[in-house]
Image (cartoon, rainbow, N blue to C red; front, side, top):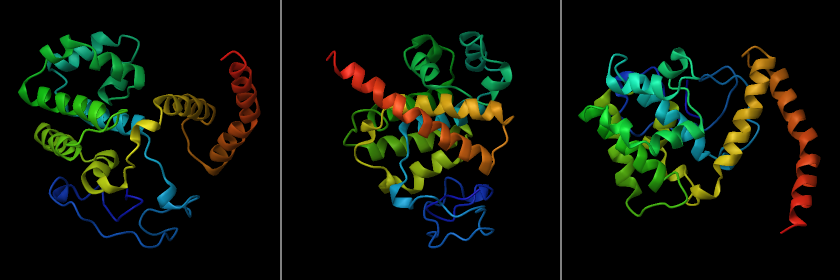
Length: 229
């Protein structure tokens, strides 16, 4: 898997967390560098939703936890509705993350490495991916990268964005509401169930048509609500 901005290779683990600069991707050629089709939009118009960055970060953190540790067992008890397989893979949604961020007992179950990574994740959610960007956000990101490396987290695409493409993130990250990300998650999960988890051009077309069909209804509902405010 490559980055859409550069030629980062997720399989080159020997250089993860050590190499920051990767060759820029100048052209997109289907069949080369893991590209299946030409991109639909220009890379400069791609928005990195804060919610999906959070989902990717917590996924790598939970996957790096010792499955016999108190912290992992606490997650199993905390979310009984989630299967153990989903917890092992770190599959959480926005409300799950908010519950953990507000749960002080979760930190009491962690060892020093786990706690450092969790505190770094909490800081980046609040001071970089939230409505307010701290002046020292680069230091906060660097702290997360160091703690993730120490814990043994893999370099996923979301972590790579933070390490190598900080300048790609817009200054107004907080203006991208988590509600939009949650709605996308719900819509795309419906498509995944309909197509049995198989991604295809037909699935993408069906998803786009669903958005177009819902658009007039959404506009009508917003106009109706506006009458009362």
